[in-house]
Image (cartoon, rainbow, N blue to C red):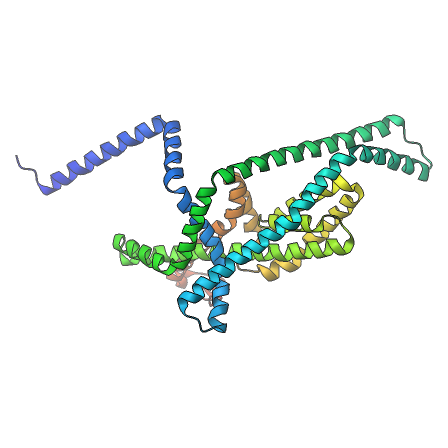
Length: 396
């Protein structure tokens, strides 16, 4: 008996469902082996491309401004402007790296060496300090109290020493791993440069593929969503990097004027950790406190006060003017994004949670506004006024 086209379609769909079910059963039944195989395939085939994309995305932020400056100030051809802007971006990144290696790393090495040389001196200094307090206040602290405080300080110094040893060991392992995969980095970097040179052409090819698969209306919606996602990430990283540079310069200059040791190292750490929302400045301050504690405990206490003041300046003056409303989230939702992102993906989630929440907010805002405008006649007056407000132009 000859099958009709509808019966053939049902048989094909049934076979596809059975095949997919069998594949999924074997995947979930051997999830460990499947995960390892997927990771191996990813590392072999896609890890370099993924790394190249992220490198190109970050380099594109300063490159875009350099290229815009060249467009207004020079009459070079488009290809020459793109090549020169890429070259200047790479030179800028190399200069930042050289400054860090030239000043920050030697200061870190010096602080560790001074800690190892002066541990016994710190313990004696604590004892002398306690005795001085006793004489000034005409009250002799019991010897057991002095011994206990000295023991606690000794434990703290030893803990810091062990922590530094673990950090150094982890850093050595990271450097070894980086050197072993140096070829992968070179390949990813070369691919990222190609992406920057050909970004318009690559975007056009991807756009053609998108519209060849989806209808025009669905393609438009996907493009709209990707633009929101790109703006959220671009605004976030641009704002955090700019704020981090300002904070690093402010910290270095202020610490130098106030006479703090290792000002370049600690100021660089404070600026670098600022890319972590909310907790970054405190994390950098904690690292700086530990470094100063190795060489000058009293100065470390003054530094703690300095960090509190710096954090207030950053929160109330620098952040509103540099980042402003670029990310489009209130303080409450930033806090929620950091907590949820950190709970899901740790440090990566803390950093990426804010731009992802910004994207989600824009999508939900567009959906709710569309639904409310369709029912505008039955809404309260305050809501009608809200949804009819003109859109504020986004600051790029």
